Image 1 (tube, helix red, strand yellow):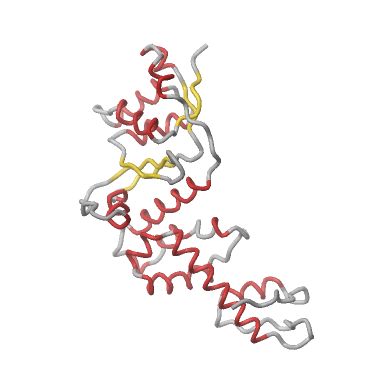
Image 2 (tube, rainbow, N blue to C red; image 1 turned 30 degrees about the vertical axis):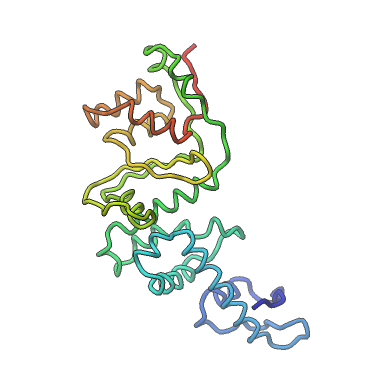
Length: 259
């Protein structure tokens, strides 16, 4: 159902927004239609349409969270969320960025400890999807460097790249719920790299020390300096495997060689 836009110029905007987000709040005083009649019925239809649209946007943004909770539970949770967090942007692709922290603060969901990190993973994948396009380097360009030059080089990382460090097997939980035939998650912590090799973001579990190494690169350290930091965390840090994940994901955009 569609309706004409409501005339709200004469209505307090804060009161209008509060009423729009909460069906328990009365229609704002002074709201009238184009023929100067009370617009209560039209406002209720409009309010319902907004709530439905925001709920659908949230469910689309967090499909694994929706599957884990069940659609009806997710709809109820979305109603609580949208009343506490009305949209700050007209672009629906940005709605729900506070949702992971909202879940973390819900005492009723504390028994599902991994839920906030699953939501953080899905939010990062959404950010990766909407990030600016960049051209990835040719892997051969790194291979052409001497070992010394490689370790002294710095790299630029694509805006599509995100990191998540979790005490939960979040990548395996995501795959189990999104990919048919994926194995059941095992109890283990996972550090996650999110890249966008084509048009769809992909999460990958990092080897021990991998997140620390990539974080150091993103902070401006050389490949060698980042390796030293990662090796302090894990003596068996696998530089080759972690670098391969970045290259496969098209995550590196520039090489900055030492002058």
